Length: 274
Image 1 (cartoon, one colour):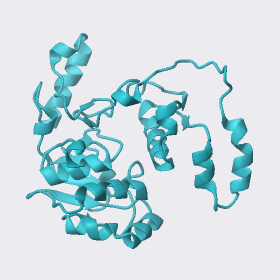
Image 2 (tube, one colour):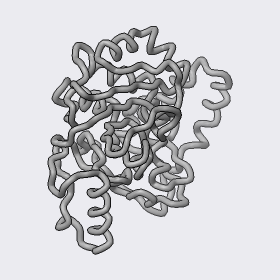
Image 3 (cartoon, one colour):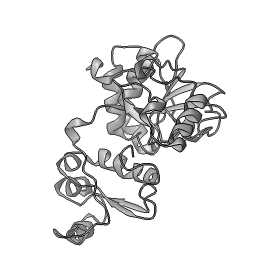
Image 4 (cartoon, helix red, strand yellow):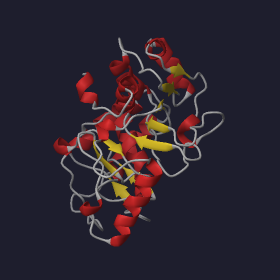
């Protein structure tokens, strides 16, 4: 999203390909495709392969899907309207600093400055975003303190996501003053996570485990609403103004990064906890 831009693929179908993509498990692929809507894409796909076939085994109609897989793969000489190349080896853990999913920086970087932009429109957007988020130009990403940590949403609450976050949390505890919530993405995920002992790890670390799967704080649903000015480290997909509550300030990141932030009390590099 940072490279193509929010809305940069409006009306298009997007295909993700390459060794980095095909090294992902199904949960990772689902997250990538889920985020394509933030590009404005009408659809997103990753060509079926052995990982797909393995994931489908045991499911009803799996034979039918396997049979069709060949027709779902792009021709070797397929022509695309536009192609982008991103080096997977160069990707660092990202966090958003603004009010759009494409306003992001590596956790080791700083919030942008006006001098980083050329057009008056981009400078004005930067100013508005920083004002809403309560940040200053050039501020270190890791200096941003949080009030709440939220792991959930359709984007990042599968069993694999919960396992990764639990690895960071095991033997550690949420920082004083931070409210932490985890909401499994489905009833099946909840049952599996509890059977694996993940709930116990989250609760021992100070997270509140929600037994009802659902959207929760992703869009300020039910009573899970962030207060005006409250800063949230969130594993969700959208950080628009007011998305998690009127005046709420949302920083998007991976579930493991949310766990690291919850422990630290501020945005933190998950690589320091492994």
